[in-house]
Image 1 (cartoon, helix red, strand yellow):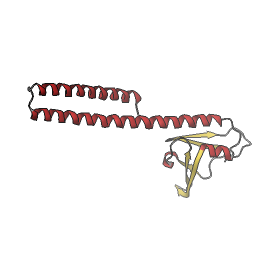
Image 2 (cartoon, rainbow, N blue to C red; image 1 turned 60 degrees about the horizontal axis):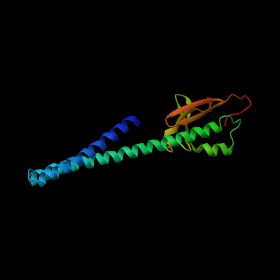
Image 3 (cartoon, rainbow, N blue to C red; image 1 turned 90 degrees about the vertical axis):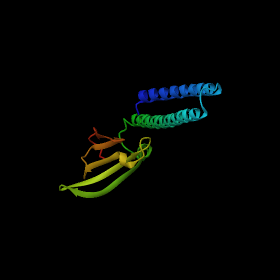
Image 4 (cartoon, rainbow, N blue to C red; image 1 turned 120 degrees about the vertical axis):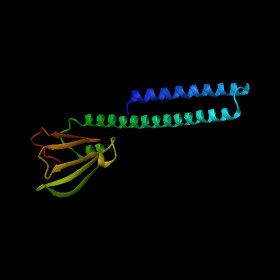
Length: 168
């Protein structure tokens, strides 16, 4: 969601709705003076009401999109904060895994082009939630010393630098 464009559209729609409110007042005044027929008044106000309802629906949709974007941004910030907290760990333990990872889904081993391939899906706490967002194809067995982070559709492969630490 482009926040600048969303805000620009929101302001435009709100200004238009205010303009329509002013037009309603003008139409009532003109009708009360007898200048405008009842039939024409009904037709004009119906068109304005329809436009205003459409604008209100779009404003609601924009607010929902912004709310979702804000929630997603908050989840990513929380995840980054947690990752920084654990950036210098020497060893993965149960507490760290439980804090960062919701679940790990391991697919069955398949042969593709003569190599064993296995799908691993990692569902992290704080970001995403759909296991399809973190799909990884890796060789079986994985390279020693390699690990993976997946944030939404982005896969980050990291190397362990400690030579005495075995991969988990």
